[in-house]
Image (cartoon, rainbow, N blue to C red; front, side, top):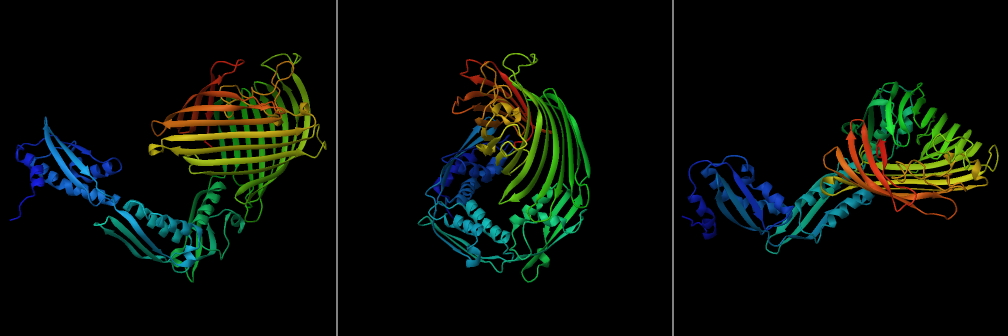
Length: 591
């Protein structure tokens, strides 16, 4: 008969004294290790399941006996194969207090990684990166979870890049407990790399060939899941369809060629939008719109919108004509009437625009011509008489060309945890041709968001804007072509467009340059509710007279059913001219 080891007998001794009645539960404490090892131990020990469940004497005895081996098993996936465990058991009222003292021991290190892969596959960048991620495990503590993830990532990259018949022939992790070392051996047979065949659209309401403009690959190109995702996103973004399913016909692939089936269902053709809204820059207002998602079988679009708010009234129309080709090229013509009344200016203008948009090296490129005509006043405060000294009046016609490059990457358009956007624009008249003043202008706007911390419940948001104008007559430029700072999306703590160079009567008239930056940190207490702290700085200025204003404050964030709602309270910092609290309210997505 085998003798019970003395250490185990000491562990079991308190169980002899247990009564036969059931107790309310087990309070488990683990010391000697920190997370993630501590969490792994608690999850792996059966005793943790009886915190709120009654347990009998016999059950507790069995659970307590099994606990040391369960602890050791829980630590092995993290590379600890030489753990020792001792325990204490005490009765606390009706409950039992179990304390497990864990010494994880010396971890197992990966001393060798051998990854065998066909050269044709290893030369492809995403596959090569996945292979290197495995090879970088050498010299580190063996982590089975990290190993499994890295191995599966390489397998997934093989499939994603066209090696649809790839097979994992060898996958071994050999652990030498004596010298605390491990070696990893992996071998794949990649097989042939598949190519695209034909793309078949089912359920489309358009002329044959029209949807080819959204296909980011050609027949004969190598198969790529990223390109299929790009096709899915492009068709969803076109807003023509309620259902888009992109399905590579892998089962019917022959001779290394894969056809792609795209199942479509048309969206509602005409949509009407409308309702009240509120923003501190515009005041309370009503918005209404009508959009014809497709006018005809050639995919033409027509969009109209009317906005009537306390400080802004607009009426706009835009007609888009998609063109053949694989770069999603479109010609667009439109008109926009705008009646704006800000803290520092009033304007009433009509703008006509014609442009071409297309995808260009991963960017959206827009080239067009604008014709802007209207009247304006600058420097007016509220309902002052128009003849008040210092108020500048003007009427201007400007015809200018505009080129814009924009790009963004966002993981979730509703609430971004990782994303960025960048827009670069250039405008210029052809001298004084058809214009009251010649000007050239450059602008840049950028935004960057990253979630961080436990469970990604915090977000860091960085934002910046810059601009510069060359002109022979600044006074002839309407407010839309001047730079101002302040407001919801500029320097919070100041009113909308209330910051900028002043004339001799101390009235803000805007500037030829702009430089604004913002840093914001958000913390979410629940999935939908959070708070923010921010610091904004910047100014509109002329020449080199850049004296940035600073605004700081706190805000509330609510991810509501209608979108993100931001309520901020900001105040100027170290500004002798401006004091108090400014309310800012913005409703809409991050990008």
